[in-house]
Image 1 (cartoon, rainbow, N blue to C red):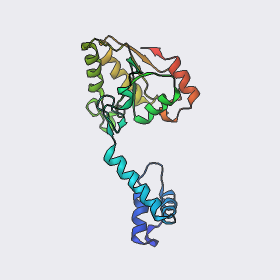
Image 2 (image 1 turned 180 degrees about the vertical axis):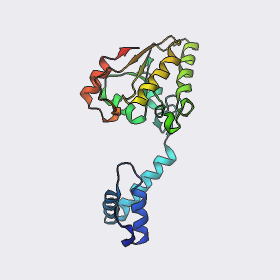
Image 3 (image 1 turned 90 degrees about the vertical axis):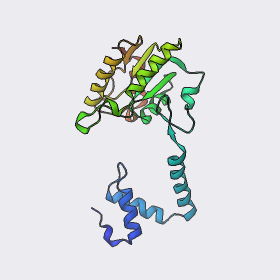
Length: 207
């Protein structure tokens, strides 16, 4: 472990805060802190302004729960999307991975995670109720959802989440499909290569 006691308090605090970021251990946090220390002050201020702008101006879309500056988000508001399909993903990063594939032209719904009872994450902690309400609302306005694509990962928690979703969606009139099983077990969608994701989307199966 890096000894932050040999650094001035300001640097030690920065190292400690950077060390809380995902994927950054003490050594990486120290290298990053010293990197910032060696940069021009305006560059560091620009970074700080960008961080503040993200926290102050970015919010969740009230429809799909993706990150957005406008509500509804551009994807939900687009007239070019197939509004009869909803692709359900765990996180905004998964949404971006699928959107980047160029193979899907429908709408999205971000759950905000997966069911994980051992970690205290239940249905009420995810955007599941909103998903069911979206299908009901679409039916009421005469634009029913034809297909719901469950595009979650392949971890045990994700599989349990799919079973739960299927139970709550089976009487909503939409065909429920799942990504094909070409996905590596236990891997999040954002880390899946484009070719594998393409196969999983193209050959998704009905549940």
